[in-house]
Image (cartoon, rainbow, N blue to C red; front, side, top):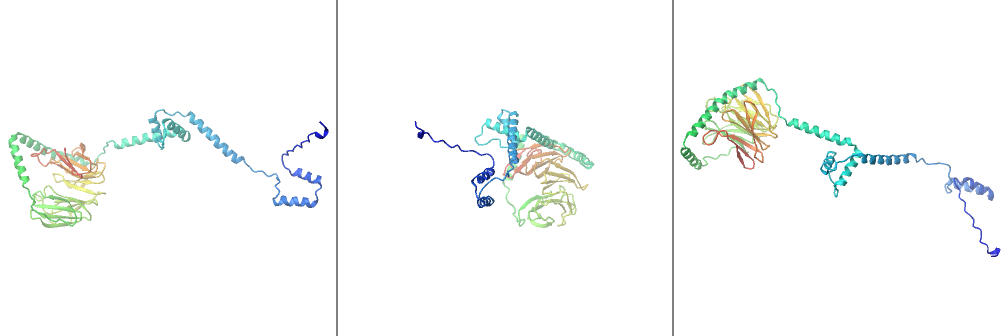
Length: 424
């Protein structure tokens, strides 16, 4: 091969590190560029068209340190997650998630994924969060159990005296009732059957004797007087009216309530031994007012104060000394009219108490309310001796049997708003 055929030498490219400013100055000096050219280059550099580093730098340490901290925190979290022990019982895992306020399951999530989710949550909030939540649940449960426990407090001396008086009043009446029941049992079955048939015939012949418009608004309650010659009615208009029986002529309009009157009741001895100027009736209204009335005036004789919510019913004790009231504050109360004070504020229902009735002996009281339960209370001890359940709706009426001839006098009748009734 001749010399002419030799391959040309390849010129290697040079790589410069750092700033090109010094190299550019050297090149310009070697090439002998005029002063005008140098001024042009300088003007271009100043104008920003020629980008030559001036030694300035951007601080990146802060941003890098934040990212490093996040990465380190994630590594620490994963490390804690690997050290946390989670139960393999799926029910317990769900309970732990519920205690932490997290959803117990997600769409398409299996037991293994649920355990892993719980582990990740605990690695963030810490295992102590679950222990703290369990302690709070146990504390709330203990508080609820303590709240549901029966407790007693010492009552006033007037309550003790009233209970002793009630015992002395009711025990002889109970003996008379039991003697009458034993005498009734000695009567032959055929004789009792004949009497019941005669009673049924009389009841079948009962007709509507009179009909009267009592008020512009609905009549909420009515009651006959003990001598069956008077009838008193209560209305949602706030008026109570006294009627003559049997012609249903209006005798007097009782004005004193400003809202719906829930009930009005005669004193057990009204129209029998009491004077017309004495307290013969008691009424209650939705604003919590309770008023006492005489037969010779259309204004109340006295007011009973102390209720903060609706008073649904008033009932006289058979002795006439005590007056019972039911209130929608989940309690019923017993008032001693001779001492002119409240002697018993009885709680026990979970909702408002609507009706109250006293046993003919005067020893017991039955209450029914909006919680669909009825209770029988021993007035001599203050204890609930019977809890009656069976209704599905609110109880609006409760009554003891008035005598021992047709049914046992200890039977109790309750009724609810759905139209049903129960015997106890």
